[in-house]
Amino acid sequence: MDDALLSLAAELGVVLKARGYTLALAESCTGGMVAQAITSIAGGSAWFDRGFVTYSNQAKIEMLGVSSKTLEVYGAVSEQTAIEMAIGALKNSHAQVAGSITGIAGPDGDTPEKPIGTVCFAWAEAGKTAFTTTKYFKGNRQEIRQQATVELITRLVNRLNSNN
Picture 1: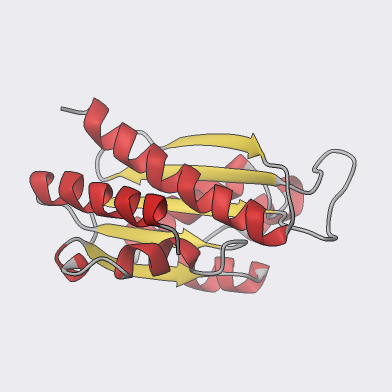
Picture 2 (picture 1 turned 120 degrees about the vertical axis):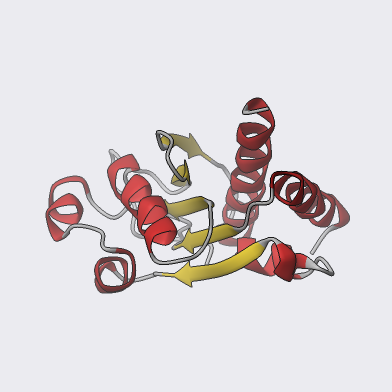
């Protein structure tokens, strides 16, 4: 894990601790990479509640309450699924903030509408409107997963800082 990612994870911890918040994560294509970055920071248990690695659609349904209809209509890689994942992480944890990632890291699984590197994100805060975005990353599987990890942590930091 590179120093820039660890520094970013530490910054997220500072922002969460300042608010008295804890974080929950719902990860698919990153397979726990965000949680790994966060748990690499000493003292992270003060601000990280839990992570859900929901790689399969069934896991998304069972662990996070993602609607099977959402998966059928929009697919696992969609902002609709990402937002349900983030809300489900909030509902199934003691956290006040949640982030989610679902995407196509490759080398296969892509479609013309959703090429390799398509990653959908969501972040939710208790009592507030949840937000989503989609990014398109370039690179190999590991590079896409790394970029998605950085993106989610950056978005969480920025979102929490904008709520001051």
